[in-house]
Image (cartoon, rainbow, N blue to C red; front, top):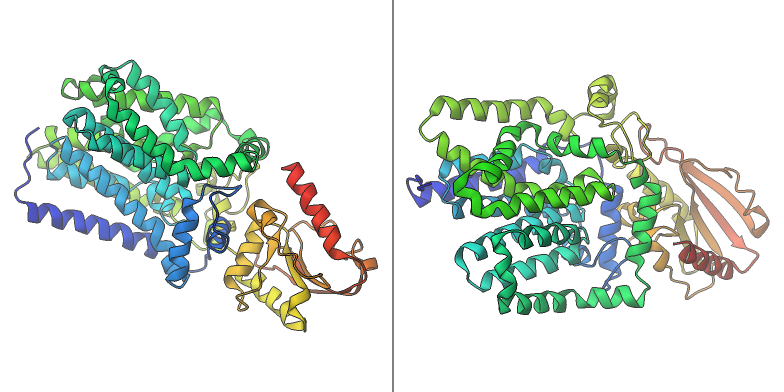
Length: 513
């Protein structure tokens, strides 16, 4: 496993090339017809409501959102962050190969395998998922370094990685659940006799303690969120699809992935790293038991790709025909499936190629049914149109201080706040974190109400007795938007105490949650 890298300049140049390529592809492979995703709006709005915790996610994302806000909140600034997290994941994967004494071919191969995978799509969305994968990869890297070097500093880096991962997404708890038995049944169990492990754990607990205290003070909303998720989304998860998709995510780099799994199981020079594959097995089984979404496990794979790439770097050294064949398959197949991975196609072109998308399950939404577009793509349309309609209604109200903008869901509320030309519009909803962001310091006289896409009361008969005038401004007509049909209504001059009704409904929603 001798490092065949000719010189550091070449290596650094290659690394820089792949990191820059990763960033560029994250921007150029997205069709301009698509807007921000509904989840991104929520995360961006959290910058305006900083706290030690939220009902939807831990607080770290809100700090990234604060930086984005300081940089202007522009589309490309928003998209830069997940792309950067993806680039850092490649950097850690590269470093794992370097630690394993992999040659330059192996390092380039792991970078290509990471780029030519589902990570490319993941890293275009400003969600906690990109940092989640980064944190998991860092955890594996620092543990590998510690077990080989026995230097205490890596235990502290490990603890910090876990803590930051926890503050980003609680998903990392499942990694710890898989890691613990893997270490216990491996020779690595002697880590439990190292006092620095416990000091590192204390450090990690100190870092996450504000969020834990917040959870305690708010009666653990994360548990309520998980129950809601299990009831409304995870119930449709098929375990067979979960396992199949683990490999479909890396179909173009499947040989590298299989090499990683195989070498960790059977290759003697890697026997001391068997705890890595045991962690993978335990974690995957835990995810399967809880019927987790397939992408929850994506953090497990950079380390496997690193081992696979290192192995190929050994057996393919100076075997140029095999190298060309492997790269041709990985890159060639990636180009072929690129329209399935990235939002390259317009909605019309996707519908024209519907069978191709349907065969790989791209059109199946979280409700278990097939639709015209992938759910994520439908969640990236119609938002500017909605904000424009709300702005028309907002402009008709003379006294903005007694106006409330109430959306049907968090996607609508966040999109209005992001795209509206009125930067203090402060749209809210009875959904997600917005339920806690109502400002009821003045009596509400006028109301801009946004209905759901399937409105059971399109004429607002329920509200007619309570307002002097109700006007429908319009509705979302973007044909393939998930929110198509959502209406915007202006309700003027309330004749009742709207505040008490809203406060009562807020408490009712909180109890339901």
